[in-house]
Length: 244
Image 1 (tube, rainbow, N blue to C red):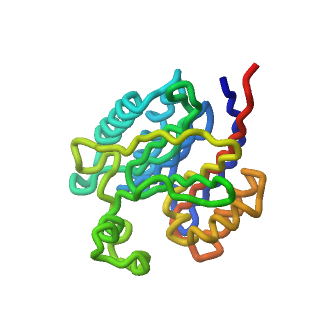
Image 2: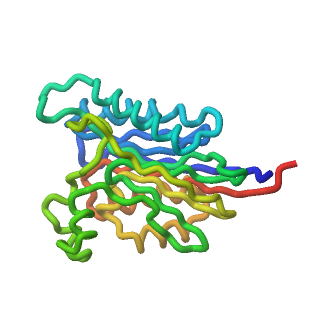
C-alpha cells in the first residue's frame, strides 16, 4: 500500500466586497472551495451550506457514485435556503479534491460545479483539471468567442451550472486523478483566476515551496492586480511513501 501525506495552505480575502461570499474546507481529506451567488447574506449562506454538506466526503473511501450523491444532496440543501427574491435564488459554485482510493491506488477524487477551478502542478507544470461551467467557456469551446477575448466577454461571470440557483437538478463533474509524488493541487475561486493569468500562478507556485506561503502569495497577487472580488486559495501538497 501507499501512504499519502499532505500539507495545506489556506488564504482568503473579501477584497473590495462588503462581505466574503467564498467558503472553504481543508481537512480530513476534503479540500473544497465554494463561491456563493445571490447577494451578500444569501451568497454567504449558500457557500457555507454547500461546504458543510461536502465535508461528509471525508468519511470512508468515497467513489464517484458517492461523490455524485453527496453533491446532489448539497444542491438540494442550497435550493432549500430561503430566497428574498424568487428570481435570484441563492446558489454557489463548488470545486476541489477528496483524497481517496481507486482500484488500490491513492487518487484525487476531483469534483466541480461552476467556474471556480482546480489545478494540478506536477513536474513544475500547471494544468487546469476542471472545466469551467460558464457561458463564456462554452462559447470559447464552440469557437464563437476566441480564447484571447474571453477575459473581455461582458457575461464572463455567468455560470451554467451551480449548486442551488434556479435548476432543480445538477450535473456535477467527478473524476479520478492518481496521486503522483510531489503533486501540488490548487483549488481557488474566480477572484484569483479573473485577475492572475495561469502563467503567473504557475510562477508563484514554483517560487514558494511552502503551501501556506504559496497561498498567501497568490492572494496578494490577485489584490495587487486590482482584484475587487472575493478571492480564496487552497494549496495542497502531496507526498507518497510506502506504508509499513
